[in-house]
View 1 (cartoon, rainbow, N blue to C red):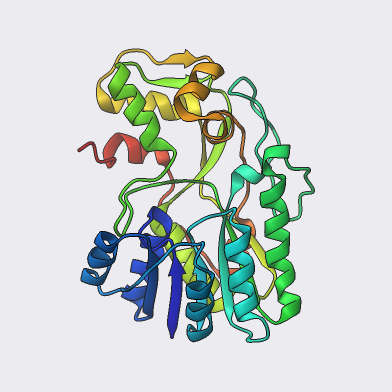
View 2 (cartoon, rainbow, N blue to C red):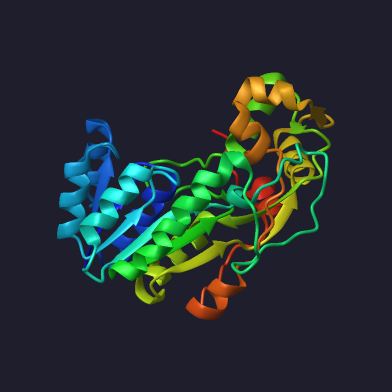
Length: 300
């Protein structure tokens, strides 16, 4: 089977591409630069040079592949529409990467939410996340066009990437901030909680979804949870820093931008992946982001 993967130079896409290749699939991966293409080819993955704006490339690759994984963006409507149009009527799998900030709140680090979402929990997305929720629904509806569309809604991903990019997008910026300032900081009070999952378990679930997931399905991806105060405390201990501190949300916005400060680091995003375990037989092997930070997180 040949699989086309967008974002193959990134953290998730590169890890999924590598996992699929190790499983014996022929993988073609979309990358943006010649340097990424050269490095991807060295791993045994066929590079496709282009971007999500290159509709002709996306359409051609989707039509020639047996399945498509979109791991380049959770929010690019043009790319998703182009790929789905190319796959319409084929019955081929289209696995889309979403993110659990779609159910995130505006706690700004100051409130712990008791709400834990599963796939059937109704919710009204925050205005900043309404477009993502609509795109997820568009993808699920593609099942009516004879596309085996599947959404994997990832939580905070930790661990070292399996492909070209080692670092994820949430914990490394916290580490970088702590190192540059000498103080490990969380947004607000840091009592907000995120579900989390190791990248190796994520890659395993993409493989299971390709093999088993029915058309129109949606799965949350998690195997544990922790508050940002706990995560930042583990970072401080690993780096040998002093006491952690609260960071006013405006300072975090100035440093990271509104989306990251308010949703990536300041919101609650608590979900259950019981459906993926039940329907796909997913069995994650890694269970503690705090242990990973303390024992396995690379510092170079």
